[in-house]
Amino acid sequence: MPGTLQGKAHAAHAGSGAENLTQLEFLALNSEFNIADGHARQPLTPGQSKIVNDLPLLFEEGEKRPVEELEREAHAAFFKALGQHSYPSAPGRVLSCYSSSVAMEILSRALSGTTGSVALVHPTFDNIADLLRGNGLKLVPLEEGPLHEDDLAPGLLKSVSCVFVTTPNNPTGRVMAPERLRRLAEQCAEHGVVLALDTSFRGFDTRAQYDHYEILDASGARWVVIEDTGKLWPTLDLKVGMLAHSEHLGLPVEKIYSDILLGVSPLILGMVRRFSEDAAAGGLAELHEFIAAQRAVVRSGLADLSTVGVPDPESRASVERVLIKHMSGTQAWDALREHNIYALPCRPFYWADPDRGDPTLRLALARASAPLSQCVRALRHVLTPR
Ligand SMILES: Cc1ncc(COP(=O)(O)O)c(C=O)c1O
Image (cartoon, rainbow, N blue to C red):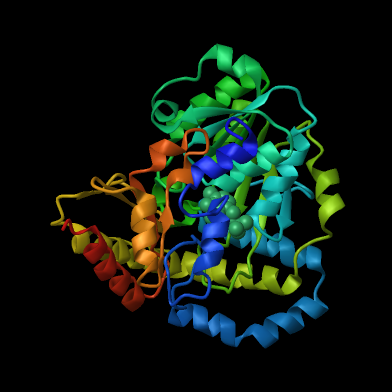
């Protein structure tokens, strides 16, 4: 088994019995103390509750108005709320999907017809690697540190058909700065390589809300961006993943989209428009304050433990890694389960070298405050050396 894909999966999650992060997230779904998945599960704000109270009206609107119009309005409101003023508005350039994983599957299938590997940021959420590999693509790890500091080697760019970056990254929260994006896009343009971004977590971080589309278009590169409403708002997984792409992409994303779906529900599009408007009118700033307070609860709750560190001090994403010096993340995950608490061990995020994820555990912050505080107290107990 070692060396095979299955062998790798087993090695990645040794001890947990699971083959990927989502299987670990399933285990947590029914627990009051689910701090595993990165989906939004915090309480609705008063402004958001008002939208939920208006659902019958949104339903009626969805029945009566053309879906094309609702979709256009949802896209415009979402992109505007996140500073993406140059987003593509021509028909077919932003494909609305049931989730960002569906958008990712469409991109992966489209890339499977190309020659060359995909250079993928390392670490990142494992389903990105799994969907690419599941479509027969070979992956080359792009280490996160160097990716944000230096140009990519021309030799690497000659051997790949796509460079894929998650920004802000999950689990590290690392954001690609505008100058780095510009340079990376220019390099991809020079080598005829597609530049793909997953920006699912950008709503949490104003540093990721500069106009990416302006930079991508100016570079002349062929590009794809996967956007997501699912991490931001606690809408019970009623969400949209969007696959935005450049003109002349040269990949059959629209055909593959139509192989998989006709479109997303007009009710959800109406909700996305209203939640986006609420975000632009102060909801996003409120969310940032909330996540910062949740992060402070985790950091202050563990601050005096000499066995614990903060690996991502700059992160503003809705997830927080904890560095553990005296046991593995998998051992801590196991010990937390005895308290009915479910976090995520970080081995699987290191899709090319799981051992490097051993010392870290990831906690989800987009949760109600009281259960999160209880989780932190239990984590403190588990991580206190005896
Ligand atoms: C960066 C990133 N992209 C995509 C996904 C997949 O999202 P979904 O489960 O909504 O398809 C995740 C899930 O956590 C993620 O972290």
